[in-house]
Image (cartoon, rainbow over all chains, first blue to last red; front, side, top):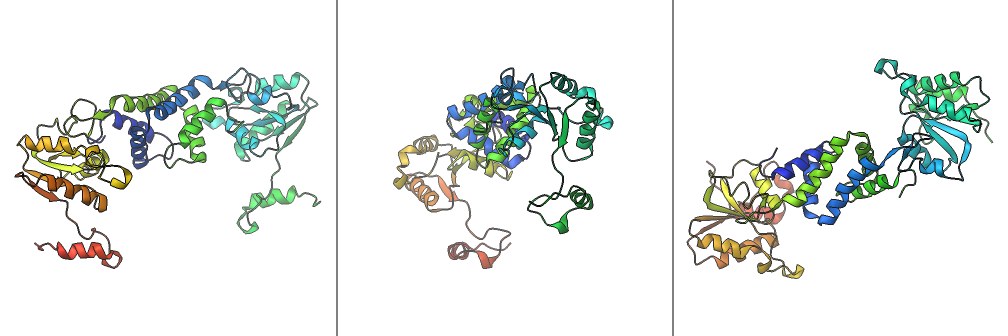
Length: 201
Length: 201
């Protein structure tokens, strides 16, 4: 708390400092910027923050971010509803969508199974996924959980409870990340690349 | 505008991107953070932005930032009101106060004289400074305008209109910035350091 600032400036600096990656200096700069800009611009930011908290909720079908009952992807007629891509977080939907390659729909689990952190399968949206599959329309489930222990474990668990259905279960390919060098890849990345080697077309 | 985000998230990302030094990636990260944190924290930030715009005004005496009629410095009984430090911006008050060396009061000009940019003396708070000096209490005026052409010009102009008063006019010392190397100082910095050389105590 800096005496040279007024009380409300100090409060704004403190609130900005709570944001990730924003230190004291940057928070001061941002607060002075808010003080300087027109009232309209500042109010637009304040309103945008409030709106996000008030309007954004979960899609009733896939648990992605939505402002209506269903998200824009589930509501999109052109999407192939027979393929569901399973991700851990809404953030992952955005990452995948940016590639422009996905015509499928999603299912957001809301995390991964992590018994040590007290997260078990019932804390995720797996029940709702099973219900979607029972509806009969789904032909393929693409597992796009994180390529680590928790993500793989979660994908395996889901595939195990669906083994009596006719749904084809795939996962995103593992291998060497394009643009890197073999020299710096770790042993298990190389091992997966060898095991999963693909035909050179 | 990213289709994978909802409308209000896109709006928030856009508003965050308008802040200085915040690019698209950082704005996305901040928006997702707002989405994730508790409603209280997000609303506190929105409120802090609104409060700054609504509460912060100018001190009636010195034109520094204030939330009451006078700023905390002018209202402080322990300040030496016989010395006024003249600065260009409220930001400079904060910079000087951080040294912890100032027991004086301030006068914020609101800029510097710059005829080419259409700013002349009447656009600054010089009239109000002259009135403060006429009140008789002031013994010294410390010029702390920026050490550049515009700042020096403004300081000279103020000192010229006050030359018939008994007020002593000083300015912050010029010379080599502590912690640097002589080798990298420019010619006019060295010239000022030679002309203004100080007794080694």
